[in-house]
View 1: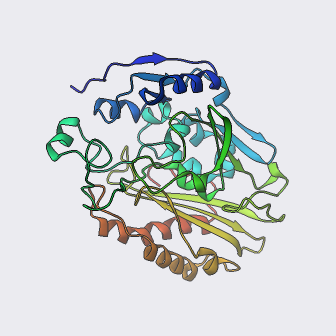
View 2: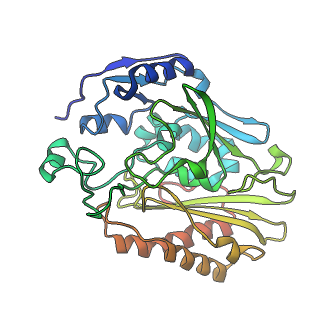
Length: 356
């Protein structure tokens, strides 16, 4: 039986109190929301905090509501509630799909979107028991001095394995963080870095408190921010989004590859902009380059989809950081991209089911 290490449990009622506790106890403290990832990692002794600061009593970190021309999502909203929320399903189909495909229903009822955004990276050589890791000599990410994937370098290549961030990046979302110096905003596209040891710009004494996504449609009077730049787009555009996830079993498993796509369509069906983001291949999600060159002004037909899928494959080179063959995962990139773009072209306006 794997047992939790000893720790002191704190349950603050405000963001300020939580930040104060994290600052007071420094590297000996960690925040916890749903705990669906942190608790197993603590049992594996990947983290051994002496103080665990629960965020679940902070009402200000809940809620899904329209604020000006954005949809505000509190970081404590569960993945289940996000996948079922009418506003999210209507405006951000890809995000609703992603939230509904995380793990199983028990974990989605506990896991939060804030926890999913801040999910620790995963690797074959890292996510093991302490006994297993010790027998191998540990790894660069935890207690060791060598990366067993690359065998060289001082940068961890554990895989980013969260489902919602690729969609949030493609949708031009903004994250609000609270820390000792107050609150600050970070664009989702700038939040993640390439080092798998700590792959976000969130400091250890900061808390992700909310997410804001620009709206495009009736609730924002037909105007909204572009997927990457945050520009206000002209009236008449219609935004669609889709998400595809590859995994060994169509339940519970983390992604072997994930693809999020967001397209802005003119009234005549041609594309004004297109963003694709892939993840689970490296330490951070990757925005696919050159898609606007192919798609702008075109209809999303078979030839355009094939060209976009080929461009995606050329940019993706997975590492052997998870158990499935890297070359097979690379071969699946154009397959999943075609499927996601097919959903976009078909105007799918309902999130995929678990068997979609």
